[in-house]
Image (spheres, rainbow, N blue to C red):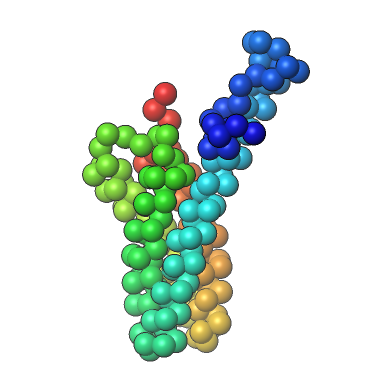
Length: 165
């Protein structure tokens, strides 16, 4: 695999595809590009997720900060990590010449995604009555993160780092 393919650039037509590539070749190139994009998103998100969970638990379990405030602070730190990873790794080929606009939209959408996580935590604590640190982690870091991840991928890809070609 060439460096361009590894970084998510569409593959050049191979011998089986012919010079024009054909419909099958175009579909294969599109799938390859999309898989590479999703993998880069997951790497970036994984790094931000680890930061989010580590900061959340440091605040909650070591510093005895209440769970909702722990989640708010950990989300802010994770948003900064995610933006840097998204701009310079995941969608580096889609960056605009207006990083301030990118950051503002990214931040707004990240706040909405973080609110999804906080909402899951709130629901778990105040509606379901689950108040243990384990329940807090499951509701915010598993259920909330899953919902927020899908939201982030769809909105970052289409609104923050749209295809500029």
